[in-house]
Structure formats: structure tokens, C-alpha cells
Image (cartoon, rainbow, N blue to C red; front, side):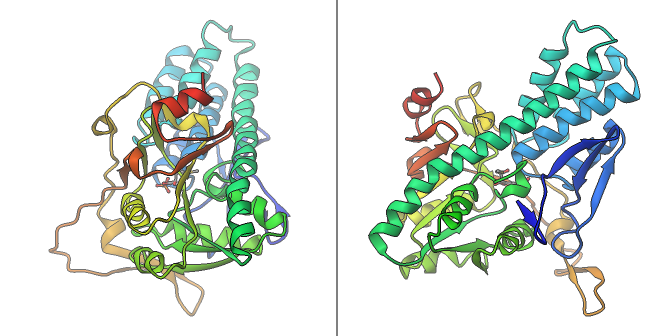
Length: 356
Ligand code: MRU
């Protein structure tokens, strides 16, 4: 998608370097950063210079390419893969991408390994882009249906950033919105600010603005009253890990939006590429929920009148904090899963029907 009219992807490989858009600087500064080695890739994932389930998977894949460039040695590659997998615990894409790369590289000789690794990392990004585009085309049908019935602007609520910045391009939750906008359907997006890191306010609103899509940032707690007032036609969110039973783990606060949507008969859709499906666990209690630094909660960051990025404390130093980064929305609250292969019920039957 575009930034200041120019098309970008979120990650690419150039001159033996991995290039990323540093998302910790957005929306105030647009900075392209070079990742030179696997340590840089791990650090970019941990500090959330790159974030969003599909993008951290792609970064891990390129991280392994950097590891081979640095030292073409099997034990170093293995150590890199282990460190990448644990760099963020919740999104399954990280493990999915590392496992896929390691499987491809198993038994490959030293001479060919770099080319094969690079081709596979590129294949992961190309596939994600294609899948996200298809998610958009599938989700577009739901928006079209609402628009035809309502004959007015379709109001869509989203949480966090499951936009193109969280993927390679298009996004998951935003892809149906971009496709609807490109088709001339009038859409307006309610953007949950998404405390504590404000991915909604900082990233979703920014990328929608850059594409000329009408949006309004709201506090995380405002979704309920907007739904009661009939001002939300549908919700679309992303997911970091989807269980085979249809439960979805996404940014903290997603569950409360789903509860509110259920109470107000607002359709609640989750958009995902198949790389976020975890077929291996049955119980959401087994999902490792990331607990992040309390400073994300105790401080807020913004830009002052001199264009300088500042961080300020907002509650007493003595107060205790708990910063859980994700929650689980049970399948019974999900209207449907929008995938690259079509839309299905949030259930084992639904998912297995699409992904044999
Ligand atoms: O902590 P983040 O910013 O990586 O969390 C991102 C989300 O929760 C997204 O909704 C999710 O990764 C889906 S991305 C298409």
C-alpha cells in the first residue's frame, strides 16, 4: 500500500540487508531501517520495530537468511532459529515461518544454502501478500452485502493494527476495507486506539489516512456505546493464533469488543491467513500469552510542539502494573473467519472444510 503516494512493502531484501519500516517511529517519522544480522532481526521483533503476526514470521525467515550470511554454520543456524522462535511468544507465525525455513534447509549443502534460504523467505512474503489479497476479496462480499442493504456508508470497527503494516501488504482485517474502498463502496472505520502501545491510533489510522479512507480514532472503551447506538455495522479484527476449534487469540481487548458485538447483534469477523492457524493445541489456556514491560503501561509517547518525540509517565511509580498483550475470543462470539480460501464458521468443521 502507499505512504505519501509511494507503494511500499513492509519488508524486503536488498544488497545483503533486510530493510524494514521502523514501526516504533510511526506515525511521526517514516524511517527505513537496515537489519544487518540475525541479532538485529531478533531485536526488531522484540522491540516491535516490526510487529503483527505475519510480518514477524517474515522477519524471522529473513533473520535466518542473515544468520547464514553472517556464518554459514549449522549449529549457528540452529541457535538463531531457537532465539527467533522465542523472541515473541504468542503469534504462531513466528514458529511457523522458522519451522518452514528449517525444513527447507535441512540437508542442504553449504554452497546452495543461502540461495535456497533467500528464495524461501521471499516465497513466504509473496505467499502472505497473495493470501492477504484473497482475504480482502473474500471479505469484500460481506461489506458489499451490508452496503447494498444499508445504502449508506458502512461503519466498520477494528482493533489494534491488522493492517498492511502488520503483514507484507494489504493487511488481514483491513484488506476487505481496502478492496471495498477501491470498488467505490463508502466505508468509515472506527479505530480502537489500542492501549498500551496504541497500534490503532498510531498505525491503523495512519495507514488508512495514507489510502484516503475515512476513519475515526476512539478510546478502547468506546466501542460498546457505538454499537448500542447502531453506529457499527460490523467488526473485523486480526488474530495472532487461531485454534482449530475457532478460538482466536488477538490483541488485548479484542474479547471485550466481541462480547459487546454479541450483545448488540453486530457481526464480528476475524480475518486470517492460514499461517496463523495452530492445529497442534486444543485448549486456549495452552497459548502463551505475552506479558510485556510495564513501562508500556506506565508511560505514553507522543510528539510535542517542537516535533520531538517525548515519553511521559502517567501514573505513580509505586503502582503495580500488569501488561498482558493478548486475549482469547471464544469461537462462539465469532460470526465467521475470513481466510484466503473463503469464509467459514469459527469451528473445527468450518476450518477443516477449507483447509483439508
Ligand atoms: O502486538 P502486535 O502489535 O504485534 O499485535 C498485533 C495484533 O494483535 C494483530 O491484530 C495481529 O497480529 C494480526 S496481524 C494481521
